Structure formats: C-alpha cells, structure tokens
Image (cartoon, rainbow, N blue to C red):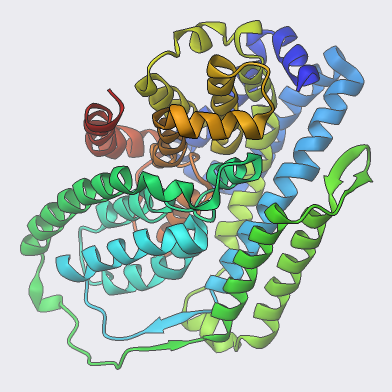
Length: 450
C-alpha cells in the first residue's frame, strides 16, 4: 500500500489524459464515424493503452512495468474469464414462451432481474434475462428505454444485497465485511428499485398505449426452459467465486506478480465450466437464443484499453491526500460526501478499487493505525452509515455510464445486435442518467445519508 501511495503521489495529473481520450473515443467516434469505429475499435483501444503505457514505463520503469503486469494478471484476465463464463453459460439457457412485451410483463422481468442480481451477480442476471426481454418486445416500435432501465436495475442497482452481486461488495467481503452485512442496504435498495420501477411502469404504459396493438403477437407457445444444465454451471460459477474469497491457499509468482492460488483455481474452474457449457449445450439452443460472441469480444477489447489507461487515475486516487486527489479526499466529511464521491468516480473508473479507496479513507478517518479487519468491524459498529454510503455509491452509480459496470456494455451490444437503437455514450448520460438516475440518487441522499 505504501508503494502504491508513493507512486500515486508522484504521478502528474496529465497522465489521466489517455483515460479521458479512451472515454471520448467510446463516446464520440460511434456517433461521428460509426463504420470507422466498428472496424477499428480494437486498434483505438490499443492506441490509448500504448499512449498511457509508454510514458508511464519511461518515467517509472520497473515499478510501472510491475503495475501494468499486476493489472493484467490480477485484474483484467480474471475479469474477462468471469464475464466470459457467465456470458457463455447464460447464453446456453433458452427461456421459451409467448412473452408479449406489456408494461406488466416488462416490469415483472425487471423486478425478477433485480432480485436475481444480488444472488447470481449483475452480469449473470443480465445475460440470463436480456434476450427474453428483447424477444418479448420485438413487436414494439419504442423500446430503447426498456433496455436502459434494464441496465439501471438488473445490471447495476439490483446487485447491492450480497457480495455476490457486484465486485466492490465482494472486495469488501474479502477485507472483512461480514457476508450478510450488505443485507442492511435493503431499505436503500428497495427505495431505489421502487422509484425506478414506478417511473419505468408509467413510461412503459404511456408508450404501450401509443403502439399499434394490432401488431401484438398472439401465439400461445408454452413456457419452458431449455439448457437447464447451465443452471448447475451458473451455481458452480457462484460457488467458485465465493470459495476464492474464503479459502487461503498461499500465493504463486507469475512474472513477478503474487497471485493467490485459490484465485488461480477459481479461474481454471471458470474456464472448465465455460467449456462444459459449450460441450453439453446443443448448438440449436444458442442459435434460437441468437447467441453470438461479439458482445464479449467487444468488452474484452475495449476494457483492456480502459484497464491500462485507468492505472494512473487509480494510483492518484489511492494516494489520497498525498497526491493530486487531495482536494477530493479533504472534502470528505459527511456520509453523503462518500456516497457521491464513491459514486461519481465509480461511474467512470473501476468501481471495485474505487470502493476500496474510499473504504480505506473512511477507516483512516475514524480508526487510523488499526488493522483493516478490526477497523471495519468498529466502523460497522459505530459508523455503519459511512460503509452503507460507500457501498451504495459504488454499486448504484455503475448505472450512470456504459463503462460503469461491464454488463452495461454487454446489454447495449446485444440490444444493438438485435436491431434496437441504443443511445450513444453521452446520449445515455444526458437522456437517461441525468433525467432519471441522478434525481433518484438525490432523493436517496436526503432520505438515508443526510
């Protein structure tokens, strides 16, 4: 930690430019040059990664090389393995039935997805339900907002109740937050879910009434689920992730990066589960599910650029009051400060290390010098509202941008593949996040954190 803080204190603020460039590329190029972006987004991602890595390596040499290797080995590769396993396994489950996109059915799917997200992860729940939701609403003309609210609720806010729901909460569990403690977020979770579902239902009812109801499907296909074997594999994914946080089997050295053996076993198990899904799921099911590899490929390519260009940003943040982020750290006093600071940065940076940074800031504020686990238990005992604010901020604000949480990008990519016109990066923020999410978060602030 001392080395990370020391490095973050030295990094000049201009080193965040490649990350900003990466974000602007994702935001602007699909709008002004869609064909160029579609054919070259991989090259653009690598370009910004190199623009960040080369000066970083020249300035900090071995330390920078170790940081890049650490991010790739300890964070990026496990991140992609987990996403790929969930994407592949969920893609082998075909939910059949005469689902007709009505306000009641759609709201029901969003509610079920919000509940499932805390127990099978936001990625698992989103990948399981996004295709049935799209099929149910294929007949409708206005449907973009349906997928956006799906991202809000299922791919993000729904995952706030357990450490299995979202990576920052799992990281908190690893640091000593009791597994069931996150259930204390239920009042905040329920309020956010209720507000957004109510808004959604009103919008859906309004647009549904304007649809040509003569195009409404009338088939009576019986409800059934094919590829049920994949539910066992999904359970295997959840158990392997949970056990990797409970077991402590030592470490191995991979190119100078110390990597926990239990994490390596988890990664191997996830890859095995992925191939079991491919081997034992009939190809017909994936065809009927309109499964393709492009969404996970797009996430893997874009996020390698995001992960590398994020390194200076996160190191500056980790340096706290010792580095360029000092004004942010010094302003943190009340719980709502932590809710909004954690949230806003989680919307644009990786929410897991952002969560950890502000958790450590809170522990340093109240219990400097105490061991982390002991300090966490004291924080929970005496100032639980601060941990609630940090946890809710990290999870909820992931919905504010496409890059706030990985399933956001995957849902948007799947929707576009299915012919649904999704908003641009800035369009998503301006038309939806600022209009629906931010007012909801302001209301949550006054109810729970002031």
